[in-house]
Length: 76
Image (cartoon, rainbow, N blue to C red):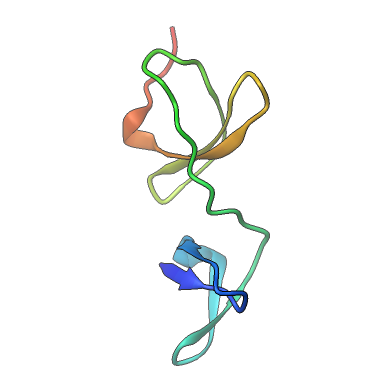
């Protein structure tokens, strides 16, 4: 779901991380960052979490963010 917060910042959040308070208001059930990260072909990353077709990854330099699972393949 694409949601704005009360500070005017918008981003995608999995519906499973929300509970509906009223018709247009939701409460977030856990800490969440909607930061999407860039990755290069053949770059090795570490998957820390998967949800809704996305992976929360960490790069070798410690950068973290979301990337679509369809853009990843298991390293050999």
